[in-house]
Length: 580
Image (cartoon, rainbow, N blue to C red; front, side):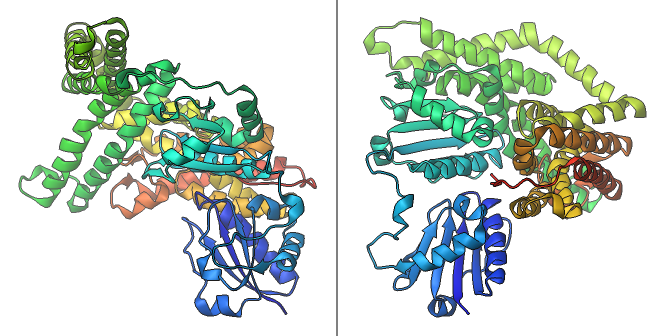
């Protein structure tokens, strides 16, 4: 009996590493080999290979789409391949890997089979950046998809992810200098001055994730030479960006403020629903921090970074000022959006049209643009836009708070369908932004319906793979397990691998479940104070109410999606399935 050690790893630590670990564990059992597995995951607890396990292993097998530290394996027989290589036939790949493993010597790279290597003259160096509004799922899944495809084509790639925890795997000046191609897969504003003079291709995280090969081929064929402006304040004006991207840039920077504020408000309710009204108490302090400070910053941050996306740094101050005016006038998130666009385009107009002597040019971004754009934005908000938008926002809030059960259910159904239609795309983000914006007006019902419905697609796909295992390949069943975990975390993108392969059955099934969940959530009067976190928000008392009926709504939608797709799904065809 062979004794092997296995390491699986992927950039996000969410899907591929878990799937590969499961497939290789099953393959080891079929071969009657003893396998110790280290699955480098951000979802499951990681059990590192011990020194004793490494010492006893006949071979170390690494299946990864990201860099793995191999210094601990020096002196052992080691084989390293990509996850995509092992998913189609894990048993055959594992046998070949063990036979091809060679001793790892300090300072030398791991040897791979010669026939898989690409001619060195054809190998290209790629650098990429991925970023999405929430910085949770699409950012990392798109990065992983690009890495898998680049390695499949025989290229070298390094991807910088700009997620909710900041930039990871950051590109260095040397990386960029050596790169043959730059790929920007982003749904928000990404500064690109560092790529001046390089071939650069821009796409969305959704396309990079769902049509990876097509987008990479288009990048090699069509990427133009990027020319950044010499002026720091206008570097971003060279690229054409839609209003959606500007809005999502504002939303992505606003989200951490809203989430922190919502959870702090929920914590204040631990002491009693009205305990915060008593001055000097801990409940009152938590309410001041969450509601008085964090939520007060919500609209200015939204407006400020919309303007930043349009006009770069000179637009930030006018946007923040316009957003603060919108907040103080009661114009809410609608006023913040309007203020952000007014400030951003005003700052951009001044930067583009105002010409000054070279000696005074340096004053434009730090003095003239912020001052003039802030003055213009403030006057427009106070005398023209603020009043009407405030009236609209007040009317919308009153309508939502006073709507009857029928209208509430209908709204929940619509929001639920939107959350499940494109799994993190523009329609999904539009519904999510609507719910987050209402939190500042203390309207919590739509946010509850939105998060509940957003959990359904990934949960439903996981349930379907459990209900009719014979209709799914082994890789799909493993992807279903990861999808279920992602669903619990309110990451609907866990269903994307299934939707990409079978959209005509998956999307309607998800929308049916999401519509039911959204409608039930509004019917039960569920309210949610924190706009993210999935079921883990239940750890915060009173963050969700009523808890039991909210769980019933989620379970009902999950069951509809899972059973519907299980019924509609054809038996698994004999072709490979790679989760992304």
